[in-house]
Length: 328
Image (cartoon, rainbow, N blue to C red):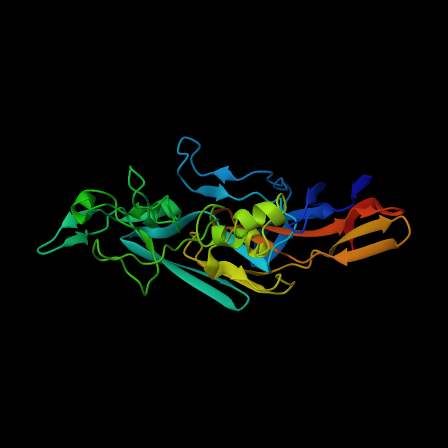
């Protein structure tokens, strides 16, 4: 079967078995745009599709990922991911970074480097050092694990703040990325980890959507996914930035606190991408591609949009013969 990309975007097809055991071929498209004077313009250099997760630090196998793989057969609604640093024109001890896409908004408070210190009656979070740029990564949010793995914050094992005993935290890094309404003040605070980047497949809550791999699964469904599998497993954004529907042309996007120019704002462009398939007997089928993944790079004034559709391979005489991506 041939595949044709008739767009200026990056595209490919790949065969996979979906969660119900059906053989499908996925047409996936990624477009990269630059933000210029509040408008999205097609970038001269298109970012390739990522076949695998990209670690934040390849030398730290227990760390987070900077980018998630683009390859999956379906997503629930849409993911919004933001990669980069909080940016201030002058040195500050904390900075609020706000992201708004369509009807959803999320603000995270970013602090300079700070540690746990011994207070008068408890272990507390010490004063933050001034900064002008600070990475917004899960390594700087609440979470972590102990060396013997007896204590793990499964929503963010890469973070900081977890220990067997509170006194063990003295002199260690304290969370620097938090929700403004849930500040980390002492070693007793265990607020839900917050972040803007992708969460890994084995972190909660994402892992819970994979379903139940028990004896019933082994005897009735293996190697298919469990009966209680949820396609939200393929969504990698922080739960606060997972949308119930794909993003649409005209949806407003804004980011504040991640560029020297201040507010970055633009509308989702109408990329007009469609997937076209030709079956042996059914004939031609055209599917408009919605945006199920938006990756923002505010530091670079750039963003990625991804859309996909899974076509059945077919059987007997009515099999998939051709696949292409084109403009509507």
